Amino acid sequence: MPKRERRTIVARASARVDLAGGSLDLWPVGLIVGGACTVNVAVSLRATVELLRTDRPGLRLVSEDLGADYLWKPGRAPGPLPLVERFCQAFGLSEGWEVAARSDVPPGSGLGGSSALSVALLLALGACTGRTMEKAGAAAFCRDLEAVNLGIPTGVQDFWPALAGGVLCIRYEPGGEAVERIPVSLADLKTRLLVAYSGQSRVSARTNWELIKRCLNGDPKTRGHLAGVAAAASELRERLCAGDLDGAGPLLTREWEHRRQLARGISTPRVERLLRAAREAGASGGKACGAGGGGCLAFWVPQGARWKVAQALEREGAAVLEARPVSRGHSLEVVP
Image 1 (cartoon, rainbow, N blue to C red):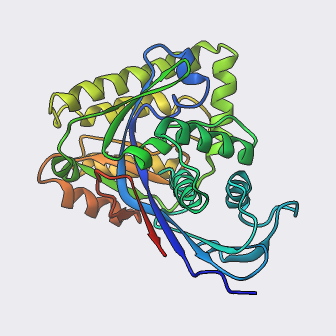
Image 2: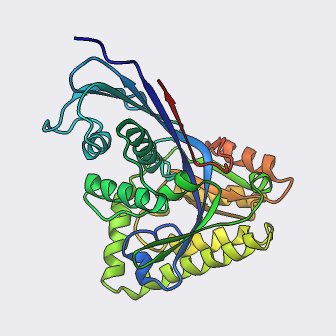
């Protein structure tokens, strides 16, 4: 039997920093809260998926970060990489390939690392099988597979930076999202945005589910704080569109003051200590990324204050990450 041709497909997809309005993308929260929107930005931290043609039966699934390497076939019990398995099954890929995943994103970072992996999988498997999707369909497809994998409702804001790149405002409307590219200089944004890893990993599913339940139950405190998050995100969009970078920083803090009240565990003593250290060093705003509870924090720094703020965070044991804003959220390479 002749050997199959050697072929390699490499897809890379960006993580994101949510500047304001995270959690509003969780269905159906964004439809319930009036004026809900999320402002986020694609960054240079990426997930990579590499497909290599093989002559072996089944699929070899590999994760360098998790130390997983095993043979998978449809119908078998889930292995260490259930999300990868679900994507392969959804695309009808069952044999003759090695699927290897790796990521620049710290685990439990709140930067949407698993969603960046989802987009990279979608792009690589789409190139492999000839199945392509427009951006809105791709975001919905990734959201639904992640919801099945986690067993709870999930959001969409994490997928759009990888699909579209740049700084985005995402609004939640019946039938889908309206996504706007905010015309802000990424070079200027790079000087203002600082991202640091707290060293404290977290699991977002637990806090997200608690938030969703409270919103659906009509809890007035929860809905009031969600409205505050939405208002801060909307004003941040206006500031960025106007080029008012100095006025943007305090809105991260305002958003965080509402967000930290949404569920138990969103704020932690470690997170608050780092926010305080950055503020005392000159940061004009800051918040935990994603669902909070640890992970990464985003800080807004005035011009000339970046080094001082970074030093203050490092003295507290945080790791400042190279997470620069990028205009392209993904790349795809096919080598025959």
